Image (cartoon, rainbow, N blue to C red; front, side, top):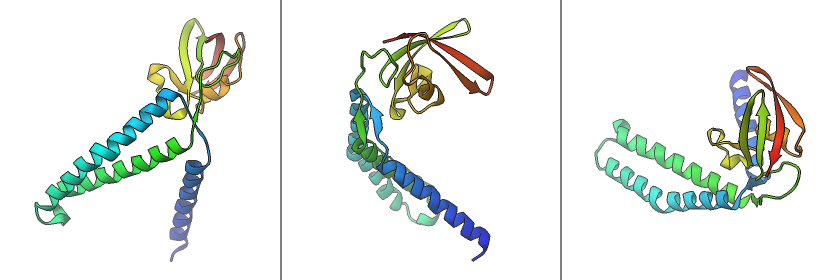
Length: 175
């Protein structure tokens, strides 16, 4: 075995171990609504989607030679994705820590925050990583902006380094 191959194998094993630790230890902060969405997706994948893909696999098998059967390989790939997603959802649900919005005067998960950068005001909500959708103003508590805001209060400012340069945010409101 060449040393290059050994290094690649060890690197792969190291990454897989890190993923396994993250999947089994760290809490998944989530709102009650977010947990409900995860459970609904899990039910759909376990109930409907797996059966649909299994049917596709069986139909593709009937077409003959599996070595050159694109439909079969596509369906198998989709089943692999579905099963991987089911594993991920089960893990996230098992590690879920429900976070309710609080009336605290400092920023936490679940709070809506009004920020000002330059002359623009921006409304965001701090959410757990599984619920993040920056285009909708849902910012992960694990993102650079979310991490910088957690624990801050109205009137404070934060600075973040971005590809466009240093960005300064002023905290105007917390609700």
